[in-house]
Image 1 (tube, protein in one colour):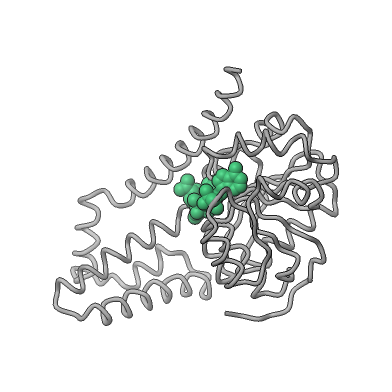
Image 2: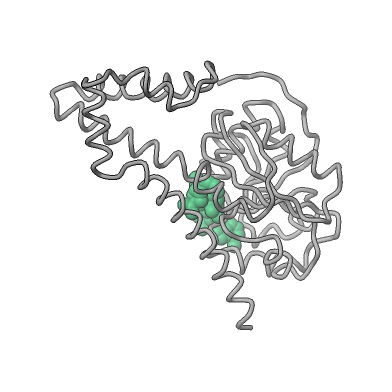
Length: 288
Ligand SMILES: NC(=O)C1=CN([C@@H]2O[C@H](COP(=O)(O)OP(=O)(O)OC[C@H]3O[C@@H](n4cnc5c(N)ncnc54)[C@H](OP(=O)(O)O)[C@@H]3O)[C@@H](O)[C@H]2O)C=CC1
Ligand SMILES: O=C(O)[C@@H]1CCC=N1
């Protein structure tokens, strides 16, 4: 992992939720020297074993949210990293603790800025983000939208945080769902493709190590080819595909399963599911 020095954020950051996504961001921030471990606190609901694991692994502070109310009330940056189903209760509890200048950064799929502000009961400055787990190795892809209340300094803090762990793009908030379908959930589709390629190699008689190594290098090489040549994936695909040859036969098999349209449908369903999760949280509000 690169140890390249970036801007050091000399600010305390509290992760409210300490699961996979929080760890991916924290690992990236620490390894890139963007935030000092002693400035990071990772809070969860109750899993003490997880707290021990995180404090041993990263030398960060840990605790449970319910026992860290003073910290939440004073932390200049709070990153919401719980599952959507747990977000409403957490935001309702958080609202009364906050002062107006505390920045809320959310990574929660589907949860809109408006719903967050309603649950908090405050027009808090909010950055709604959609990162991905590749932030762990500094190769994340994060989409961002800001609430109107955000200051220039807070905006720059958010950019520094996520640029430290990958690329960042600012989008209108209503585009964050489709972005989730591409980059938030996208690593899972690529891993699934890799699982299938590895299985195919093993079934064809390669060792599992050979099959894994070949698959990893193939996916890495293909992504780098698109990045480094600047050529369109379609052109690069056609370079591999000899007329009447083996690749064409393979692609025809994928097309019989409507591969291209299925991927588009999967992205669409992901976006729709994100909207459903957001609507469920909004619906809860309307039934109060
Ligand atoms: N995983 C991914 O690839 C991505 C996830 N996201 C978003 O990140 C969020 C978290 O996902 P992920 O990390 O996978 O989830 P995990 O299940 O791995 O982690 C959830 C964490 O939230 C904690 N938690 C739950 N309720 C509370 C609470 N009231 N106060 C404090 N902590 C609480 C849990 O604590 P405990 O274990 O003690 O219950 C746990 O540490 C989701 O909203 C998801 O939409 C966004 C982009 C990508
Ligand atoms: O599966 C989920 O809901 C989250 C959103 C993006 C990745 N994981």
